[in-house]
Length: 370
Image 1 (cartoon, rainbow, N blue to C red):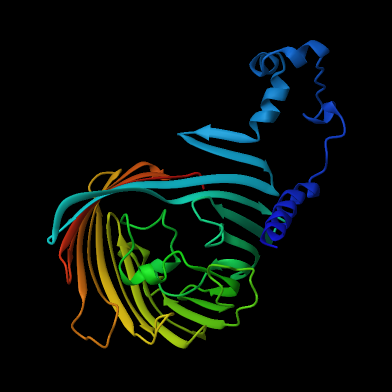
Image 2: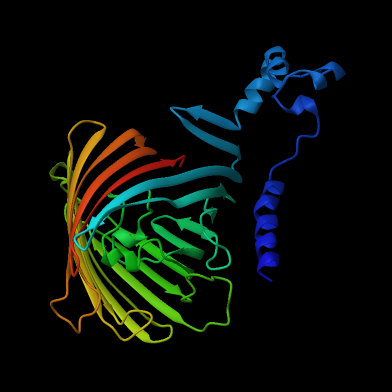
């Protein structure tokens, strides 16, 4: 059954090309120009054919660009292709085990199809190659989005509108790993729908989801979750003072147990300086009656146009029944933006103060074409 659903999605995505008008003749390749290819061209290298047929070369080059190390493939307004990958290596050691442990992994490998159905509706289909299809869906975002004035509505599979860092892609966070409490939520998607109303002073997000994170097309599991998030923009009239956003939200629902999550979040950016903090309370966690909470504070500063320094204090308690059992992480890092945020190198050192003290060094490389 899963294979059938998987095949149907691919057929649907690639059938979107049918919206584009087909090229009925070779003369339609370039407006007002005729390109003649003789039978000898078939056996010639593509480079030679393109040299002799500049109009054809110009047309083909419209399908892709390779600028500053980024390969972008654009078929037409209905279909585009993007690729992204994150790879990292981590060296870690603990007080109880002085051996150095090394891990190599690819936490994210993404193939993405996007396009516009019309001026107000677009879509996205994301496949995550690093996922094991037997344990978890390979689909990331699979949604259709409609836009009208300052309103946006989305239907499909997506990140839920709850908290701050959990809604960010792993390509856009400040460190090699998310904060401890965010790891409960980060990069988690669900099947459902959400709407956003965006105003000068505030954004309002509402969502309704079916609580099927790992298996979005298995409808035997009954669950529902409601999300709400209010984000205030108090400096909307004073952009010269920086960009400040203060947000709070609630997520409540039922899977195996009923649960309610709360969060508070702020982010401030001023020139080269950035500051953010977040608190998340989860009651209970998905698989037990435990209550958990955590918070973090992050500061960033661009030392040069490409080099950014970052520090974070991160505290987490996975079981509130033991009120003093917090694990604290202290992280310092450097981020190097080789090509803006499209190509990025991350170097982190983290000291973990918990039941067992550990430390680790992480080196990460990110590449994305969107």
